[in-house]
Image (cartoon, rainbow, N blue to C red; front, side):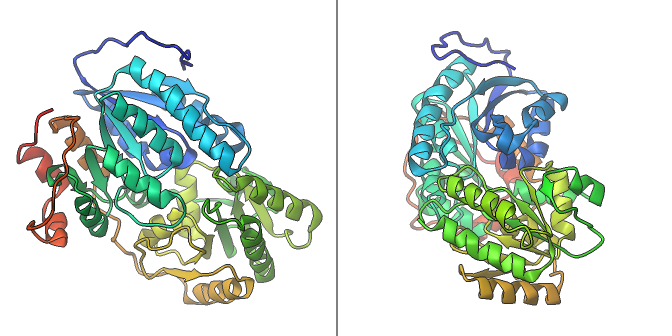
Length: 426
């Protein structure tokens, strides 16, 4: 593992293969991208460069993940410590600035042909900006969705910086085209998260669950809840909103696996609330186990088995749609996002949360939904990255007069685009 100096100027010589840079900045992106990373790593015509940064290098959020990546046979090209801690908006904004500074040096040294950007994280926007100014082709995964929080703005900003787009559903495909992107470079591949969920069939045991975190021992043979509630950066009441969920889950009196919130602005007060509640309200947390992070396959196995997921994680929207897991989505973080019938949306009201969770548990499993699923999503992305003609100068493409967005996104798969019509040269 290499930590790049702040003034790096030396470039890594090219091997003749197409060099793909994949910055990984949090636990979720590594977990959901494992299949893609493996296929890029083994492709004979591509050279994969992994760059680590963000919370994935901080033990309190992603303990041992860097070690796990290296143990998997991957080479980490650079590890960049770019997080300013504090858990508030100032720390978040400064982290974005430091990310742009550090990753500019890293990208200049690695000199990739393509930089892969995932989703809607603020640090990914900073990396995309740096890559754009370095005239690198940017491939964006999961553009075109709509949500709440600052993520809504970040995702669309990355879309306008990116050159190749891998969206997860037909609605997202339509929105990316509406933003003026080149239709020849917009591919509806489905979700990497859901592809991974479709592949995991390993059982989860009480021993495995209780090997993580602290608190009450979980018996997976009995009904249990999962809570995943992150800060909403555009709202100022994260503490009160979390307290409503804590009150509801305590009243439900079921064993609960509670995942620690991510490091977005607001996490400081949320973490403080969870610690205080756990230390000073022992009867209310007697059936709760608090966990920071688990491997992706174990997380999916938990999602498959849990009686209900509560909170505002995209896992409830995407992976759980395929798994048929009942979900109670709390608040506005996933507002507007495409969801299946397994999801019921509620506000920050403890009584409403209790009633809705009870109704979801009575209902039980929902039918599988394929709204985010397409077979071999990771392979479709690899095929495009291997074959597409790369360019850096963007042009706005007016969609007026084009064929209907749903017909286009459904009829043109990533594989057919990659092997078919031409694309503009750089």
